[in-house]
Image (cartoon, rainbow, N blue to C red; front, top):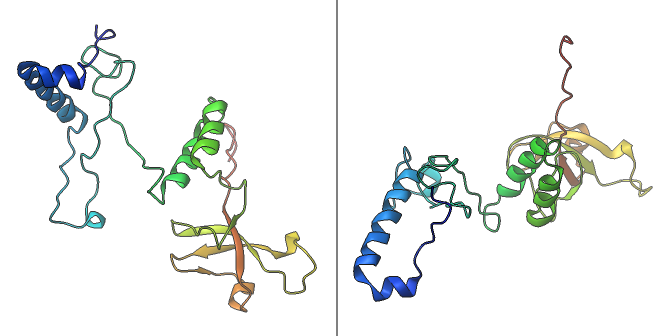
Length: 192
C-alpha cells in the first residue's frame, strides 16, 4: 500500500506552508506510534534515574513500517554504538544469538561495530573493562615471565570496580586481560 511513498524534500516543504504543516502532522502521528507506551524524556531528572523513554523516531527504508505494511506498529530499540559503552556487548550477545541463522549479519556486527563475542577474544584491561557485573575469564600477569599459558587463566567476578574471588588476585597478582564467559552448553531434548 505504501511502498511508493516518498517524503517531500525539505525544499518542497519550505516552499509550501500547507505541505509542511501536513508533513509535520504525519511525522508527529508516526512518532507517537513509534513511542506508544513509552513516557517522554523528563529533562528535570537525571538520565540514570529514567528507564525506557521515547527517544528516537525509527523508519524503515522500505516503507513497511507505514500503515498497511508488514512492520507497522513494530517496536524498535536503538543502540548508539559510538557513545554507549554497553552497545558492543549488547550487539555481541545479539550476534551470538543470530549466528546460526544469519552468519553474515553476526560477522558484520562484529566487524562494523566491534560487537564482542563472548569467549572468543581477550580484551586488555588497559583498553576496556567490563560494563556489567558478573563472572569473566581473566588472564593474570605471569610472575615468572615464562610466557602465557593456561596456568594463568582463571575465572573471577567483576564487581564494577575490580576483579575479585580469584586466589591469585587476592595474592596481589594483577589481571591484564579478560573476556566474557561462553554461553553454557545447550542440552538436547530428553537430556537433563
